[in-house]
Amino acid sequence: MGVRRLLRLAVRGPLAVRLRRFAAVGVTAAAVQQGLLFALLRFARLNYLVAAAISIEITIVFQYVLNNAWTFSADQKTDRRAYAYGLLKTNLVRGSAIPLQLGLLYAFRELLLLSPLRAALADQYAFVTALFGVPVGDQIVLLANLFAIPISGLYRYALDARWTWA
Image (cartoon, rainbow, N blue to C red; front, top):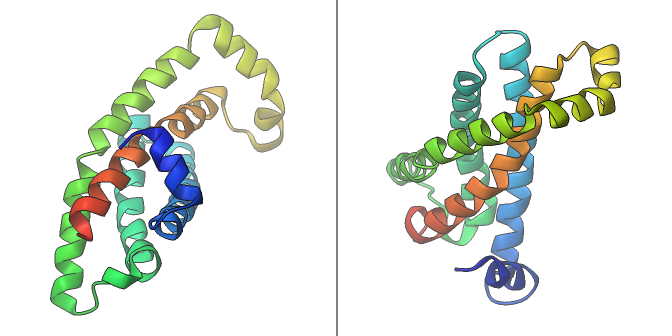
């Protein structure tokens, strides 16, 4: 399914409500993932790829709970066995996107670390470092992750809609 078609379906069509709900859950999960990533980088001082993998896995479970209750409520998994099986399926589907998202995070981070971009970002966001003590390196990881999330999100939606709640 192409991006244009997905955007059209988000506005009108039989899947419009489901797609908008999925997007709302995704935006909420992206905020949670960014918060977790920030905390793991800043306070646990983990490597950014390890911190991202942990953040992604936690948000996979978070999204399953929200999507099961709201987005895919018509196909909701209610009994314990079906719920656990659905969680396993979504972990397989969404877990398969972890290497994709980590690869994108790595690539975007490397791109943002190029001297001219890094200097521009350091100048532009110096106030974040001054006010909150967030190093430029952590800011770059968070920005790179924001670029990676929607790309891997489209992949996850396509698989989740066809397999987890099919």
